[in-house]
Length: 133
Image (cartoon, rainbow, N blue to C red; front, side, top):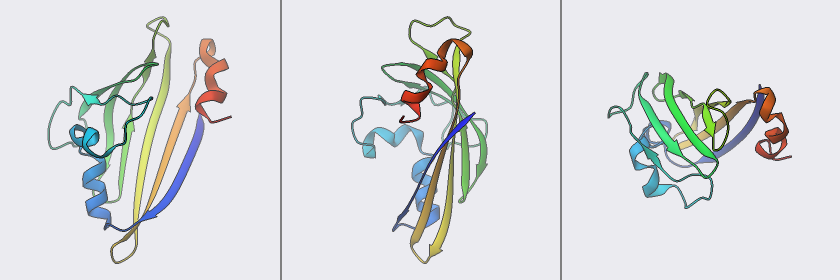
């Protein structure tokens, strides 16, 4: 499995950042328009918690997600295997997204986002595009 990581610091406290990250139904309100993300739908429950399921549509395919770990306000782990358009049903890209929040000082939060990608044999040629290479 490959890992792509990004870390940044932002001003809100960790608890506020966490609540925004796990509010799947509100992504469209704050996430900029993106060619890769068209919104989250079919969220199984609100508020989101461990075990919550959801669906994200992209131009490349459908991600059927589930919240695997939920540690408010410091960490959440999403598992969202992606069924690529025009690929056989059993051919999925295994995607896990982990968000780790650390309050550096009062009101300043370090946000670490780790994306883990697993590619099945028929899709290995796509790996460099997803990894930014």
